[in-house]
Length: 345
Image 1 (cartoon, rainbow, N blue to C red):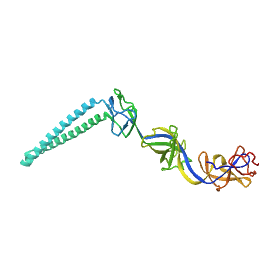
Image 2 (cartoon, rainbow, N blue to C red):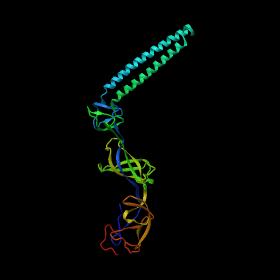
Image 3 (cartoon, helix red, strand yellow):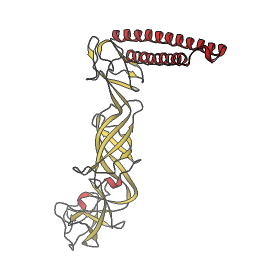
């Protein structure tokens, strides 16, 4: 808020530039996106037999979403089970045969059977064991395919889209469900090249949405790109916004500001007070009974106010009215809460 004015001549007014607290902020805007947002595709294509969830349902990672027809895959799994049983039986018979040969070899000595017969028995055992292991792998694959016929939630969250319908077909071309984890929201936005040096992870962020105009959201800068886009000269940043109860709907548009610095005693002036020309910034002061120009350094521009350096507390800064004063012009400063009707020129 501006301090109470001290009226000067020609409908201008003066303000005593006492230091006050000031926040240096960088404006941002973007979408409050869920921290995780996942399309769920069917791993096994086919006809949908049953859908277990609806729009807005909360799910945990691994919860079933829908079943796809898997008769053929179930038959393949049973065939794989039978193949494993046969391979295990063949491997067991081959191992028993080799054990008998080992027993004969120990009881009757090396001459009881030829080395070739013994090596052939060992090779047969190794072959049947390899076939058994292959059959087991095929069974695991068949069972996995059957398991994939049930679509499951990939993460904890809320079902925000349901495309699958009982009797409809699903596949890997189009998603069947969409699940959002909105326990935390992320604003992926950009800042300009002039603001980038001031932005860093850990800074506080204030945000507002049109849908909730009276609610102020608080967030934190979590990531800052060290490089600018060569076309826009803007750098991506990420802002994390806690949403533990899911009260804020995902994908709302938000505007806000990053608090890059807080100053407990800054000299702050209205934007219209500072004149800029050829890289210089000046203000007009009421010195005694004359207007005096004073060069200042602009530390920060909030869009409506400027934090400046180069003034002393108590300086009377002239805020121009319809007619700007000129340096050296005589002024009379009168303390008042409203504009007088007969101020001296």
